[in-house]
Image (tube, rainbow, N blue to C red; front, side):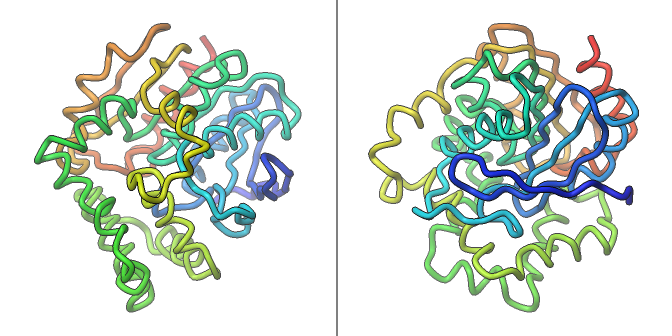
Length: 292
């Protein structure tokens, strides 16, 4: 793995720690669940070689990044984090890349501040208006997102942490069934989740976004905006054919939610962690898109 620069900034009231590489226009890279900033271990060197400054923060609640004082984790707040990070990292605008929850944050940032997001790249996540709509009614999508429901349970922390987070390894293998994740990647993820407070923070992304009982009423209008608004910036979106049930269908049907261009890339045989499964192909397409 490349030797990354490490640093921290204050953004949206949180102390964000990040890994970075390169100099030039900012590319903000946001990770998902269950993961950490080092999910971009292959992408950051390619961004740097192409003349960009790639910065991958640990998301709110994922140590060494701090937890918010109010312990809120709705996706609307993740979008605000992304916008605040662009400023904190010294840029007026940035290209934003997101995987999984990071993709929801990226979609939300573009909806809230299209003047700050130059281009958008999403990995393994349909537009939230397509994905969350299907999540509510489509059997396959419900099956593919079973964990979002399971994580609402009060004993979820106990189940996920048992046997040194064996749950997380099984989740990775289910989500990318043709990928054998290297031991160092799995150990990096488990090391993050072993840190105090990280597991509950990560599960609260699901609890606070999907369960109305746990949402902050003050965020209702903001949450509606980031969930339903069309994406108003040029977008490159990737998805695999072996990701969880129902997700590819939502991806294939999301075109109407993009007003400034959408390029979709479907990679046969890849699952949820397609950027780690076929990094050379994914990275080359990203660099080409950002350069044009």
